Image 1 (cartoon, helix red, strand yellow):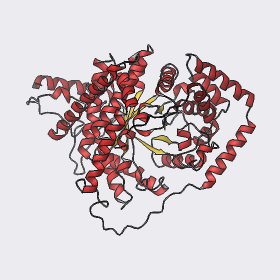
Image 2: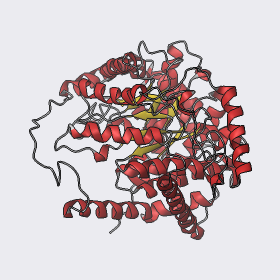
Image 3: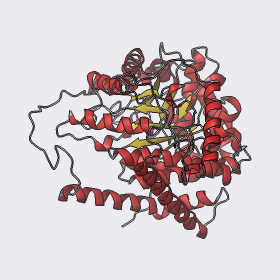
Length: 562
């Protein structure tokens, strides 16, 4: 790009920056050297390929979505938490918010993630252990007690039974007196990554896609600020994928959901802004930064050129980041504080919109209150002390970072072509990327690719080619055992007893009527959110709602592969 074009871009950036900046503070280093909000090529020097890098807030958004970077607004500190029952988790949420957290992120227990009630025989021994138990809207009431849902953005990490859980959240907001049309937050809902990596589904893919489409339509019409989909690469990476695979599979899944919206006649500029993303921040510092920058650029280009999005908001890739749980070690666990800080810094330098930092003890148990506070303070040290929020995309123009960004983008594009090729033999009416994703799920292509990557990494660790401090090098330590948090068996006993009391106190005829109405809609083609919302208002349980759909749609068993 020649110097005239670069300077024209700089002027465009300055105009946008001047219109939206909301602080008049001078930003300086610790040595009182003033820093500019953004840096680019010198005014008199051309820069080949600068149109692929550009300026913050300008297509293709490689350097971030906003001209102000974090000067306009810092990333949201959104700590992922949930354990035991709703009352215990509510206490942790209020601690996080009081300590400076900017949003909530709900971790559900395994029975809830699988659409089972706490008194289901398949829930035995699992209630409250890897997250919070939520059986009905009454649990949501307790979970968010004294937390104004109209003012706090909430993310819920749940996919299989995401829609009934969302309906219970809406009921809790209604009971607080909140106009649900004003709610803002994110529901994960991403079923593709369940088949690819996490394995928490309820039905075959087609019924899940119907529910997701219903939710997209409902939110676009009724709750415009709410994001009904968080396309998740985190679980794909945690399963053993490489950075390039995480990037490619996640964006391909996102394109599949775009095709879903378009297949329903929705306007991409209306539903596009409701798609958000969730990435892993692993320990390879520069590769992660490049991954985030490449993701924004790829998404913007595909949304504009392939799917016809005309507005900037529909072209934006907004994403939440969580530091890599899989990078944490049980050996010398205090080293995990360092790993998490490095990963969090990569997410920030990559332009994340919100961030969760893992606690040092999460490889052993759910975080203790002390470990959760350290994780939260890690973000606050980065935000308040390091100066990394003063300049937008400070690594932009780095030969190494730009080369990595280009390399990851090229690998992703090659993977997209492969996925579309997979679908050529069995085209689906939703679209070509959807065809490839469904074929890749059924054939085990995604799981096979991830398994091979995980195997290569583990073999490298065992051979010593990949060094992990405390595991295969620098193994001597004075560190003793950690005091870890344990969830008492009484949590399950009390949750089951409470569920029984609520069942006995509710209007069973109203529950039966609501579930029957939902069944009728499930047999047809209507939107399932309204009857599901009515069932949640009547205190139908998560398991009861999901069981109605299981009876109608059946369940899904992954084909055996060798």
